[in-house]
Length: 125
Image 1 (spheres, rainbow, N blue to C red):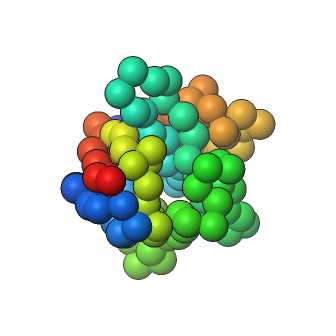
Image 2: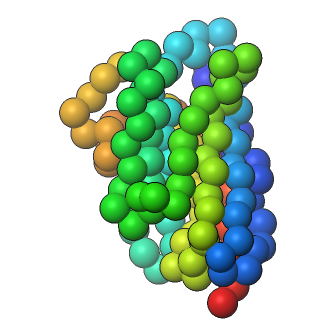
């Protein structure tokens, strides 16, 4: 069984930064890709970014391009989402997700097999 645990959420002022981590555990965890999604109050869960462990390719949603960076920690099964220049509209619960295989719909929830419980990010204006 694979488990994903997010950490690093909190309250920050607009223009500030936060660093989210997604730690994975499980004997069979051999991810093809790890992604981040977010869900703001009253809205659908939306894609933020994903990272391919084998190719190193990073993909970002347009609203976060140039402000967020996704990367991996080679020493552990951890993926980090560095969020800079945060805006109030970035306020949401952020979820980590992972897939062991390539799928063409990695920008959607259907592309992932494993999910964390989420960590809340609040950006004040």
